Length: 167
Image (cartoon, rainbow, N blue to C red; front, side, top):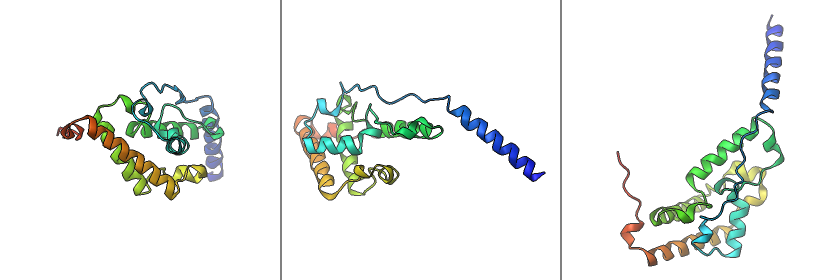
């Protein structure tokens, strides 16, 4: 009896997994960078290279998908992960955001890099080249400070503070 139930469960699971292969989530590859952070701020070549290699897959409008993104449910999980990453920070639209938000995101980037929260371990486990060394971290942190200084020079300081959240 248990053997029969297990067999039915395995068959049903196989049917679901095969059926999932016919569903392919939409791709994050609009390539629209017209509102990119690069349109507002100069990014040194070394920093841009690191951002492209370690950040843009989840935090821009273009993801370089690995082969296994075509296998479901992995592709669905990746797409949800990318959607969540872009919700927190999207380099492709940051240039069009209010100055206070740009300031805040630069502070968050520095904090995430200093605390080794980004790039995520689950990402660098598979994408070893995305792991940041000390000089790459320092270059990104230095760039975020330059951007924040640039914003502070152009806008009144009180306009660079995040508005209080409504309760």
